Image 1: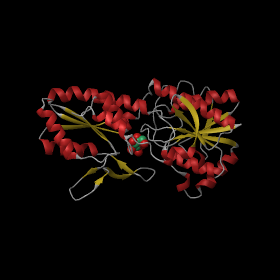
Image 2: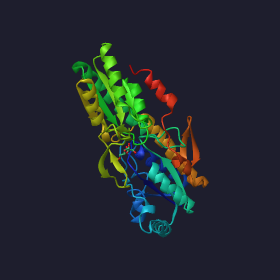
Image 3: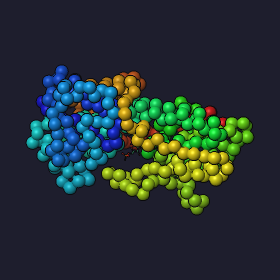
Length: 345
Ligand code: F6P
């Protein structure tokens, strides 16, 4: 039985660990594994290669994805679904394991509704996918962001500065909240709550008056802010679009820093972590989670659990409906954020 695997959307630490686990388990089931290059594009362009134990050894700890990735969505390409169906038929592919986030799993859901045999594996550093308690890649990103906040603390303290640290998080503030709590940030700004920059400034002034002469502000890239008094809060984008046609985010940290300096008079610097959070080796936690997802996904194919994805519930790996992943965003709950707020001050 031939099974194909793809990685789609933004990469994240742990993708190679999933691929390795799928291939190892597949050999026990007697599946022949095929790697699709660059996400769904691999099916559209019939671009793939054989995955074996040999070609997937030594990749457990490596960041990125040996399959390559893209944000190409077959439903947005002319005759995309037909081309995918033809490639599946031509190559005798029994099932496709799609490892991806919001975009990839939405397409996977639609394909399974079209009758294709699809199993999903949820991934994203943002941890915003519903239906799973955590995604791999998140822990690694939080580790990197926490280390950065620790480092920013010591230099902020020496110079008596405010430092704004911009982290990833397009729709949700999981990375900002976790790294902010772990790193002891004085303010955390997240997409779930539009930023009130005047309140932030007053808070920093109060801290300073209380003798705390430096502050760390963590802001998620997707935090909405008011750019002028007569406008509503909005996202800060670079003006460019990504491969999927979504606005590229970036720059909120610079605006927050400039506003803090203008309103408080405190010297304020900014540090944008960007893709450093997505690159490099996964943490041990992410390697284990990715490995468990990979083994489970392969077993799902063997059991014929199509239209489903591997998911983490508590400490168990379970099978969840694919549509659940994108039914709604998994936002940081209010009660969780309130824990972080205890330490603002
Ligand atoms: O979805 C994960 C993510 O890291 C988002 O936080 C971010 O907006 C996006 O990917 C950026 O991806 P890229 O730079 O690849 O377009």
